[in-house]
Image (cartoon, rainbow, N blue to C red; front, side, top):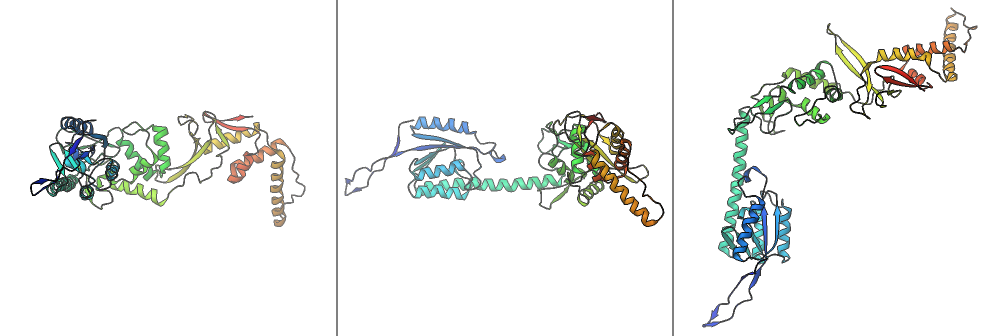
Length: 449
């Protein structure tokens, strides 16, 4: 790139005779530019600015730059910079024997990397480190000065770390949790450093409160809340994205909403927040108890009519879920609702329907469908035989002359009785023998051949 910069050594004279000059060593520079994204490096030049300044210096001093290498990693810890580690390896192989960089702290801010650089100079692999305004050659004084400057950079880092922790601790003691606030709040921007506040998000805070209330008083599970938020409310985060299930559980686990926070996380250091709580501590604890003491495993409970009905709106499956509601008199009542799984179309608008209403519609449709009669009649005969045996044992009624007439009305009557009063497995077995498909459309059962 530029004319070679050489390092010329001359032999000493003995009795006035010059022993001649050693062969000059051509210096092959690697221009190394580094910028960390951390808080303490805001004042450092950007990588491109460093390169621009050093190229101008190289042009002025006629330095031979073999390659330019860039890196965006902190130099606080040793072996944490892959580009720098490769540079050290390339110096050992002889690819470079000099480094051009903006300042000594671009090379190292830790004892480990500094020791590696000085060791390369001691072994004569590295002949020179040149910065903006200073040159460090392989001499005791210049290596010592390099070590002092890099050690000073490390001392500054260590002191900044102590000061930052002290500042964060003081901020927590004033009730301000560092970092972004959770969903339901927002950070007020202030031109005065340290004067920003945490304010309620008036759009989302009421929904956060409802989440805790539904878990505490309506015994809704996390997945119940998830479906309610995303499908019924169309609730979104501050970035206008749907709330994830894991994000929902983080909300339910966070004491921040009743006014307390821990910082750092898992440190055991708790502080009282200087912001308006969304819920009370009692509501938080009640919701936590309901989540922990009575977890509901989604997808393991088998409801009576699931997997037997299709959604007429999107052709998806129909699933069911339990909901427990508190009545005005304080008692609790369980309801079962059937709805589209929304797997095919997440925006499916098929409304929920209660199991009692769905059952009556299925019973009403029985007269219009065909069945596999042999199977149904065999089951009727078996039930009658059981009744005969019981009556004979009691000696109260003689049922010997009762005959099962293969009439359509008798079959349908039995099926209706089982659907209303039979066991869940009996209902499912009968509905599996329908010759028509059951379709739920606008809360109405439709028969489809």
